Figure 1: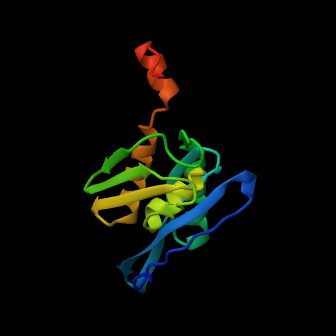
Figure 2: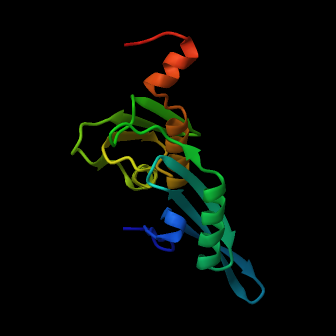
Length: 169
């Protein structure tokens, strides 16, 4: 379960055909003359389930506006992910800060074997079978960024053939 003052949610909406997943909501308190003033920061992953995924981070004085800001930013920053029969084309490592994520292709029927933050990214992208392992930081924000960094660096066999100018089959 989430720690005190923090909530983890997962939402799926049909808004424009996108899958929205709220990865983390953080509450920050500023002590002022009249007491504490709270603000909220939301980390959201948005994908179309067809190989496009993005992340957004929004801050506001209430939770709903921060989630909306994060969703808006995530839809603007979407990247393409190559998916072959429900999984990724090859093994890849992603790194962001102290977080490192290893993504492995899996056989059909395996499912998404991942922690909450990495799972949100994979499911939003439309990956149905994948094995993952994270090292270093357990911060959901850096794990999401490391996962998307890894997915951005994936290449299909056709991409490699085109780049090298040879046929690999």
